[in-house]
Length: 145
Image (cartoon, rainbow, N blue to C red; front, side):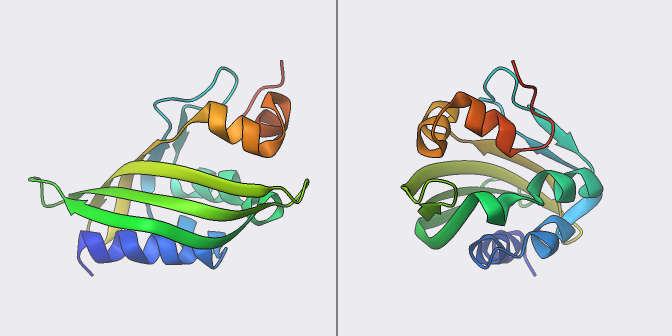
């Protein structure tokens, strides 16, 4: 599988809410980073096991029903893919609609995700989840202020 195919497969797994398989795409020492992380929210998750733990509760938070506007760009580095996509669905706790745009820069080596930099809006996520505390409470590694 080439890097673009692996990234496309990763998005399919997220849509299917198969977070165990999604986390299984990470290299043992792969990293998930959030460059725009809100205060109290983890900026970095290191290792496949930690990614699996971080993602574990995802299906209980969001029911994603559609990946929209998916565009994958191959960078000049053959191991790096830039993914633009949207996610649409429902916030489980509130029943409110969820729509979020994402851009991710993903490094794939040896058919595994080495680095996934997720450029998303913490403010938009907090609004969708019902507030900052709800967002911070939703994911392991967040601190409660």
